[in-house]
Image (cartoon, rainbow, N blue to C red):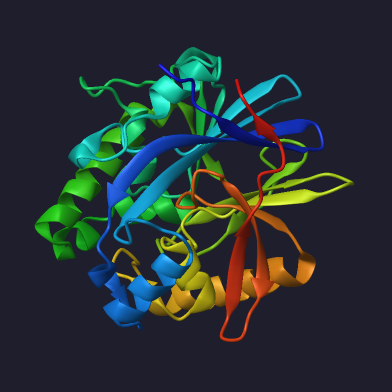
Length: 285
């Protein structure tokens, strides 16, 4: 069996590696603000063979004696993804090695891998970092009662995770997680949706979670929203602001639904922005 290829970037003292959890189906019909033919055309022109399939990335951060993981993939829920565990092992990392879990938000494709099939904690030695508004949202019975049946299943999963990790849950403030890594609040997709920025004197990287689900479409047309957004207007505003910021600053970005390359730069284009993946730091573990 071929070993997976990992794309990594060295940011100061931290080696950041994109670790695939696999793919999930996400129909272009979930998008608003663009017609399906136009969305398909953008996907095809970008070389995306299956326009309605999106990739799931997690990010491993190693350095200064720490082993951190940003998001946990699906855990195989809903027949999507589920490859994170085997890919971490291929990268030489076991669940017990992880000391810090940085969670962008509590949708199933980001927290599904935190519990095993018996509902037990997978990362036994890790503290879990989560924005206060995120924890409050998923524990709120009013929001639960307003959700669809599928949405309520998402709430129940989030609550199981929060309960299981309660003794090791750390609510994020504006302070650094550790020296050189700080949270960036990116609300709209969910109330506490959070990115994580790694800074060094030479370069910086923003892991921006789900600012985009279809990177080529939503960078070209930042007003395009997806049905999964809790507040589509706020998500659109956040997306426009962060795209403008990272393009102006030429900031390296990483996204949970980028391609397997994992890292990209954002450049201004005629209607919005274009995404250019970078393969610098390619490594075969």
